[in-house]
Length: 130
Length: 48
Image 1 (cartoon, each protein chain N blue to C red):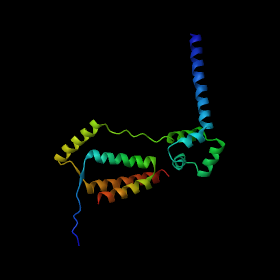
Image 2 (image 1 turned 120 degrees about the vertical axis):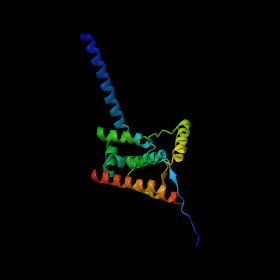
Image 3 (image 1 turned 90 degrees about the horizontal axis):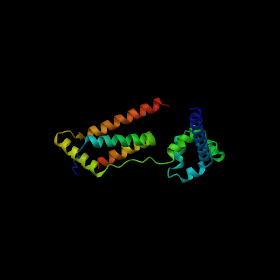
Image 4 (image 1 turned 180 degrees about the vertical axis):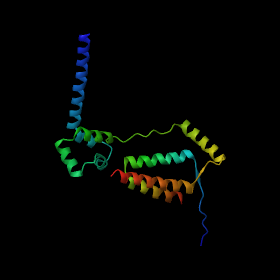
């Protein structure tokens, strides 16, 4: 039993070391990672919340904190948005046709008004988070 | 003066949901200014 626990701990320990090594590798290669990213650097800087000069200083010195690196890593790859399958599109068109037949279409004026209200809400939320 | 009739249109619930998804994407990934710009362009396009 003791031997088993010991082996298990060694395995966990190895995983931990590998993760730390990976982190150091990312930290040391962050300039290359950013260079190879299809996402604009200005966008990543904005998302990191770090001021531009500080960002470049940190980049030069490779001294981003783990939290900062995490935010950068979350944004270096563009989000993949799943396209609907042909079946889903057809199903959606069928439902739309039925909705229109049943008078469930949303009038254009209502659509725009709803959109305007949502934008106001987004603005209010943004102000609250400042 | 030409008498231009304003086009009336309706959209489905699914289309409105898609629109909300686009708005969320623009706010989350960019910012409110980008969303407002999208809104103006969308409004213009739809009123053509």
